[in-house]
Length: 303
Ligand code: 3HC
Image (cartoon, rainbow, N blue to C red):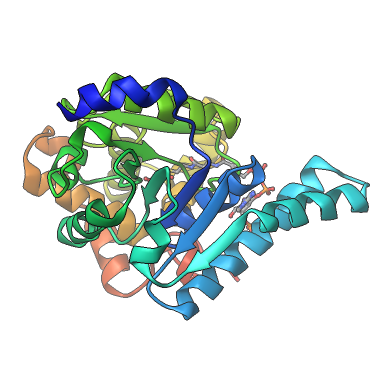
């Protein structure tokens, strides 16, 4: 019934206001790109400290993008920066943050219960037609969607790090996601000048399903003493055209993130156990707080 009602109005439905929940690296990146391409965006997080950190992430990244796009034109750089900020509001009240939204994108902590709680709350206060999307990389979209009464308007929208640079967005359709919802999300992604791909609600979707086993096998290869970390990185960059070697990429993604994806999949039991076997090096690094670039050390050191 819901999806039927929705389809009767969907021809006129265009997303203008987007609320992004979570102002970490992914959330801030999504806010930035949406604002750059003309959406009115509200960045929502639990307190002002998190919001300020998110603004700093946007500020640094936006300057970088402006310089890349308008190399020697300082005025054009400033215009892009000002235009983008003019489209961004922030809020630390999660209910108020949802009121205007035509689309809500969630990029908060990777915990099923926390995400379900948020969406359950937002379901009651958001516009009836608002579409809900999660940027989760490791949790089933259908499980998160169950917390709402709008499963037809619920999908995965999976961006990649760094969001302003990476062209791909995976749109994940559950068995309940309506065609209209998919189409609207597809239009939003196109307006952001990114490339959408569509995938069923399966572990890792497309990119992580292939990337995570590759990263884990790289670690195990070194663990078995077959080659050095440095040579594996060099090999995959120069022999397979990867922009970063697997160890550089592990550090970039965050070793805690990688470990939590692998641990989750292993528990879940849906993926071949060999592909998600543990690695002692990885476990030890995470245990000692060496999480990659963000902590200054992972497989490599960062000053
Ligand atoms: N905003 C924020 N960070 C940016 C950025 C931007 N607009 N542009 C580049 N970066 C950052 C990196 O953090 C790094 O930072 P540093 O300068 O502080 O050391 C820097 O990129 C390197 O930038 P360069 O300008 O030297 O390099 P390029 O711009 O040519 O390429 C890259 C950078 C696009 C990151 C390229 O190396 C690449 O494609 N790497 C692979 C990235 C990748 O595979 N990402 C997906 C990870 S999986 C994922 O996100 C899924 C999740 O669910 C786990």
